[in-house]
Length: 261
Image 1 (spheres, rainbow, N blue to C red):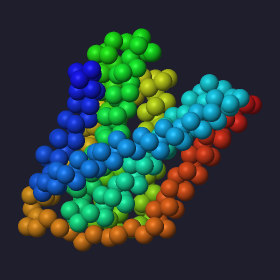
Image 2 (image 1 turned 30 degrees about the horizontal axis):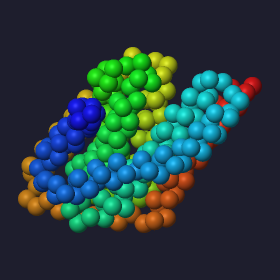
Image 3 (image 1 turned 180 degrees about the vertical axis):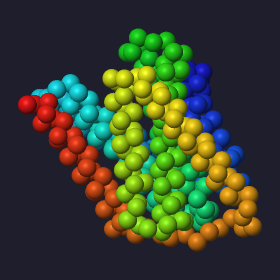
Image 4 (image 1 turned 90 degrees about the horizontal axis):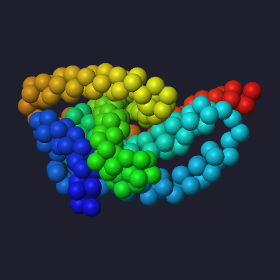
């Protein structure tokens, strides 16, 4: 049992550790751990609301692809990324140690992979339901873990542009919208075109590593860590969530309607 848990969560912890160590101005370990734990705890509201989202999805009288689109984009992507987004903004970005762009990436990865670690444990313990050994399931879950890590970086990177660089709050929607649709597209591709999903992940990983390297070089030129930080107001945050939800619902409704016709 200990081995199952260890191999379930170790990929997530290693990825968090990588980004933590790449930060020249290290974040307080306890805050990173708190963020990771909050990501784990996000499974509570997700599990509760998924009961109703699953019931609705199962009741849909539409095509197989339309149902998968619903489950991939709304039930999984939007619902899971929502709590990561809220934790990153309301817990992490309000913290005094969140004071430069790289911090957004570190905390974004931590919250995203906290959820992923718990999800991996669930899958590994349910390995017999999928016809795998637990070792095989732990290996299979590495790719979704990387995907969640990518989303944490994307969300953090885009949020950092709003808070530290452009300070244009209207762009906050991208910090939520882009991870949601990347997550949804990944889920669809892994179902219908798994080879393409792996290629997509590899391309984005290369882009992220290059971007983090550039950000690390910028840190080397800094004399002090802190930068001017904007506080995003509640209205903009909820507008971003509402607009993303609206686009998700419209896209799901379109595919459901096509499937019915």
